[in-house]
Amino acid sequence: MKIAVISDTHRFENYMEIAKRYIEDSDVLIHLGDNVDDVSYLAEDYHGEVYAVKGNCDYGNAYSKEQIIEKCGRKIFITHGDLYGVKSGMNNLFYRGLEVGADIVLFGHTHMRFLEEYNGITFLNPGSIALPRLGGRNIGFIELEEKRKPEMYLVDIMKE
Image (cartoon, rainbow, N blue to C red; front, side):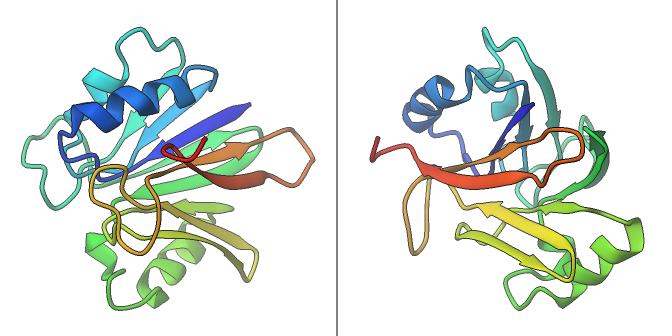
């Protein structure tokens, strides 16, 4: 199973159009907020499952602020990150990941890519395809198979 992870799209249709080519072969699309309404644009002609959470720039009630999904025996915690102060550090998010028993924690908000494993939890922030800080316009990918370690990586949509 291949999961595509996008965050902080901020209504930049030109970058979302490029991103569509990268996500089309994925089984699941996860949007981590900030202009979460962009999910409908990204999901046009997309045939996989779609999950989303709202960020600090999202005001409707269509999406929750956090969610837990299970795929291939892994518990994935998704949040925008603003509730956990991720711009100041990872402690709050780490402890929330422990609290919910997450194997993988996905977050956005900082607009900076991040991929690191700590104490058995893998944290992934794809950054922002619209307004990136300190790096490229990235989409995160997670490849899952039962009883195998997840393969996780970032792809800069402007370099390939």
